[in-house]
Image (cartoon, rainbow, N blue to C red; front, side):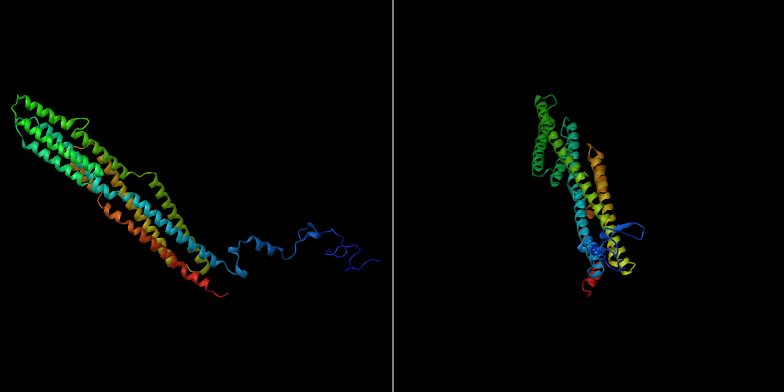
Length: 363
């Protein structure tokens, strides 16, 4: 007797279609056949989706992920703003922090020593005169005043000031010996002895006045080089600053686009103001830094060679021109910190209302 259409055949396994033996393949919609005992349960796709979706991104009860997206972008904007402010402040100070000491101390000290060396050279030419001359006394006075100015500029710290005091004392001895020689008759042996001693005080290679001043001048030129150099650390700092600025700009733009998609609002005033402040602040600090560094580089080039006569006066005037307004630009560093705080406040204002709306929204 043939079993009915809905009957289970003898020896059949539960779960298979009626009238089909175990393992019989069933046709799929595309014409292929799959074993009947391998068909997936109806609830498996939902379970797989639940397992693969990270917990932080799973919508609760099928809800929106907007609250999570806003919180992530809020933290990202604040973190990038804080890092950018710190990096920009340190990089800016690395350049502008040396501009004021260069303008007020290092560069004038180099010019003062140049003036003293030139004046002593001119005095040596007048030392062999038959009688004391006003030109000799004038050059000695110029040299002494130049050394006093260099000491006021704190040349070389305490050691430099001590060296300048020693040189000032030697100049006094030199002037006295020259005057004693000029008071002697022309053919007097004592005159030659005084002049020889005075010349050795001035020109001795080991401990003479000129040798001591030349050593101090080398130290000051080395200080000028250090203050005007743009080394690897500064390149790294400014590279990091530009990278953070680009990242923050991209994050502000992406957040603005997210708000536009989710809330149908074309512009967010807080984020737009933050972007404008970021662009304006970065351009201003870059321009200030370029102008200051160019002035410092021109100053280093000008002072990197011995100067004499009128060239010293011209160098002083050019140096003052190159380093003009560096003090004002250096004082702008505090505005970087103020701008960073304002930048974070604008980002907070732009997102806070939307975050609060989702935080307190009833479920």
